[in-house]
Structures are given as structure tokens and as C-alpha cells.
Amino acid sequence: MKRTKPISDDRSKSQREKFEEAARELKTDQSDAAFEAVVNKIAHAPKLTQEQIKKFVKAKSKP
Image 1 (spheres, rainbow, N blue to C red):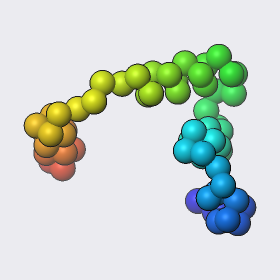
Image 2: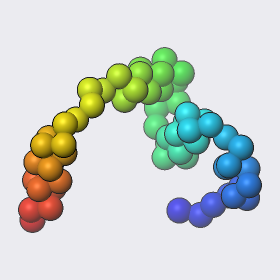
Image 3: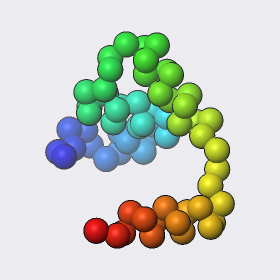
Image 4: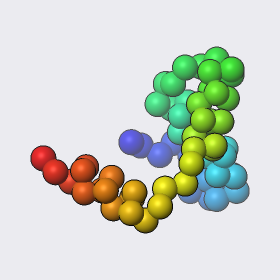
């Protein structure tokens, strides 16, 4: 993916702003309601335990 803005611009943005910009570049649903629903779903996802992370990584690494 090509970078269209100088790196210095990215440093001044919040993590949320960077996420929103990346999602829009990937051509996600452009409606604000749909976008906010996805952001809230991700933001409120339960934290995984170390054991859950290990199982997830192990499952993803299998062909």
C-alpha cells in the first residue's frame, strides 16, 4: 500500500484517527452508523487470556 501523506502527518494523529483513515482507505461501508458500529464492536471486544492467544496463534499457524 502506498503512503500518500508524509510520515510526520501520521504522528500527529490519534490511534482512532489512524484506524478510521485506514478503514476508509480499504473502502469499508461509508455510512457513519455502520462505521461507528464496527468501531464500537472492536473497542468493546473482550480481552483474551494468554492461553486463548496461544490457541489462536497455534490454530492460525496450521496449514
